[in-house]
Image (cartoon, rainbow over the protein chains, first blue to last red):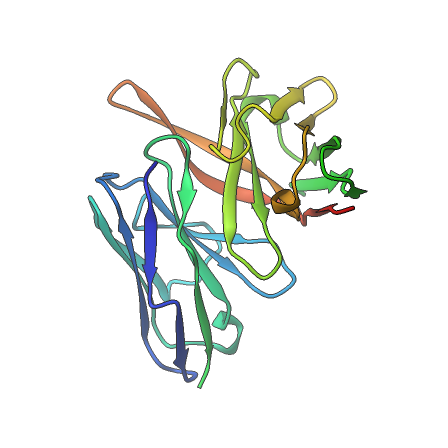
Length: 107
Length: 126
């Protein structure tokens, strides 16, 4: 199975900051990577798919890049509603797998 | 409005069985693959299972292979997850999600979960 490793596990930042979260796959997954945001008590929400495509309705301050094994999610100009947990997920081969999550909280 | 609504979560004893349902509305259910994802208390997300749009093919996480069965009724627009021989580690919130398909190099990739339900809670305990 492909293992997805996110770093850091948690990060603190302030409103207006820029934050980058990394995701590494244990083998190449091309660009078959998605990013999800989950706020407490809510279902996950799709942010980015195919490594860098922004899901409809998602603010443009979210950006994804990478291919192969190394990927990143960058959030520019952090807003209060962005403080949440973020997960990457590979869809290159079954079983699909998620990263362990990165919690973004307010400094 | 596109919506998914899970139900069927309950408290069940180890070794018991449970069937979860996910009712879809607002989109042509039979055109899309569907996925189950779970989240253990205070932990991260775990991909559980996927079924193709017609129900022809299904895939499972290693942790549930042989114990869980995913199925669908396209005429009723309902997704199911039959869970047998339940263990304490199956305790989780179970989400269903609509899956989008891409085809590249002759292979199928269910590359994004673009609509999620709110989840149903399964507790396995004696």
